[in-house]
Image (tube, rainbow, N blue to C red):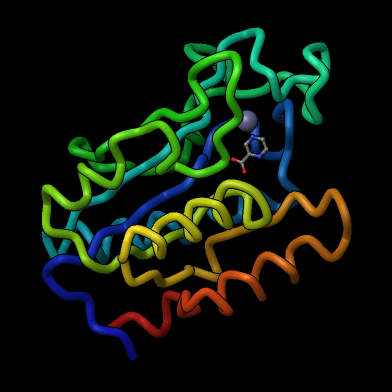
Length: 192
Ligand code: VGL
Ligand code: ZN
């Protein structure tokens, strides 16, 4: 069992409408993370621990879009419906929201890239990060990698992540890499 402690934070990665079924860049079963994340949110808020949420927040001409030569259909354009957080996600009022990949010229799959996320976490004295969201093989992987690089102890919420799987092995490879880097895997039942 893992007991929540002072200096823990929940980090929810890119749970936005465009990444859910029916969205512009749907992650298969992406909607299934929402009720599980709500239960993690309850645990953290009840314990007085902070919740952080990253969001993909692109300009309309972002370099990752196909019409700019990138790999993806246009998605999560800043201020549009598709960029909103999932309807059912019950983010607390005081959630720290971090927008990423906001400039046209640079892709950023990590919530730490070009943002003040590390500084915001360190300001609060956070040492352990519990990470869930979308997608396992892109923004979750890159965010976990950077979190470990920044010295945070990382717990991956394996019941609250889903993969795009452009290639069928992508999810397995991402999980293997995160484990190899030192992330610990947990589910809601393991949290006391
Ligand atoms: C993501 C593809 C493109 C993600 C963002 O949030 O994992 N994936 N942009
Ligand atoms: Zn994107």
